[in-house]
Image (cartoon, helix red, strand yellow):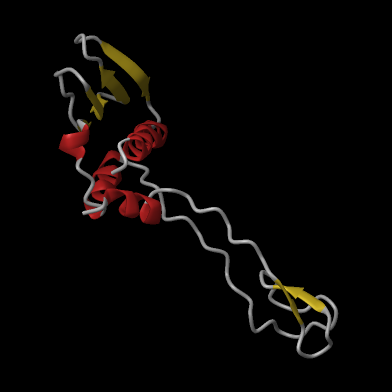
Length: 141
């Protein structure tokens, strides 16, 4: 599976498409494709397109697990561990420790860098997701 295509399609945020300007078929005025009506005569714009919304980001550890599974991301190959305190070197992960959520990076020398420790699960999940996206782009997955 080409993970670059999966990520570009489902994880990366897409820039909004540039609106084109067209001629109103009723009055001849200029109408942008992101406007639902002609600003000059009020006629409906047949070329109106709704803005695209980004896919929802996971907010919990469980949602992050489902998010990665739905995209067939190779978490073990990338050494990402969701919901577990993995002790081995060269690993990233997130887990719950009492009332806190911990996002960590285990370095090659066996030491651990805590990237986040606190009560905000959404922030913790976002912190790990950003690293996961970066690593997938860097490895061209």
